[in-house]
Image (tube, rainbow, N blue to C red):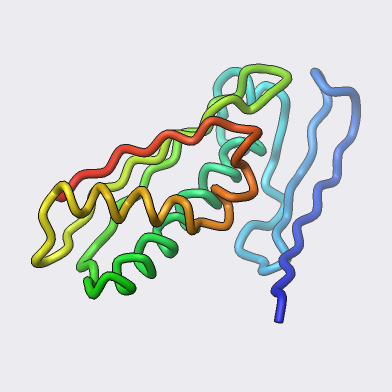
Length: 141
């Protein structure tokens, strides 16, 4: 069964002086301010589509890698994933994923190989692939 998730934005005004709010259907983010300046300058407590993509990508990749490690017989103690989403108007150009993992019984080379496989299994990576360059850095903690 396919899962659906919902988000809503209310925007007022033009692109450069206008502003909006983004709310997620789960309620964990409600009426979070979003502006053009938050995308291209300093966030100042506001979010941006790129920050939301980075968060979604980091979370999705952590889950995909955890599953891929399990398929190879390894259970991670911890995975720390950072995603940096680069916006070069009018396009998102790259997402750089950095993962540091604590995985008992796994050497660095094997972790890097499984990390690459996990990236190929990540639904957000697959949604972005062929439109955005995805870079992956992986190392054991």
